[in-house]
Length: 259
Image (cartoon, rainbow, N blue to C red):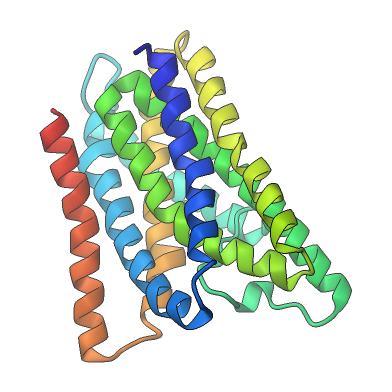
């Protein structure tokens, strides 16, 4: 299978299939969704951190265009700051619960605005995810697979939250599904952009991998982990640690097995 075929296939895995998984998840009764969603989030944290520290960053400091260590650190720090600023401007805002402060509107107009904002933010986010997936595949097919799986792992709980916001904004279930699928297609667009541009600019790939790592770290630490602290029971904490470790282990085993 050609490199382009790999990129298209796994960008679909990272984008469209995560929407389908979230849509299936929303068919469950509300009490089950509320019980399972925190577990998805815990696993996604491990997968994101595992992909960042065990796959993306090591590849950014190896190979012919490898980054010097201090350059890598600076790139990651600037990436984290950039994602913080994007989130501040509400261009990149995730909601991993059925309701959250950032997206709870007080009137009909704010509800519609929230739904539109979620779609714009989701499309932008997916476009960047696609670029990261494409750049990872250009570096190494195995790295691309791992990156795609990590993207899908954190996209599922995000898409569940986005569905809930759209429904709360007055979207019908069918309309919410169609618009979420359209927003997810930007993942493929981003991957194709990376494929056709980075093939001629290999020197930029390590920087993209470093930014990918910073995005995964930021999402895990800034968006996902704070939600876990809302549940402080000992058994719940143990469960969170186990699921985070499971997410890391899946990435580790995938990385070592594929290589």
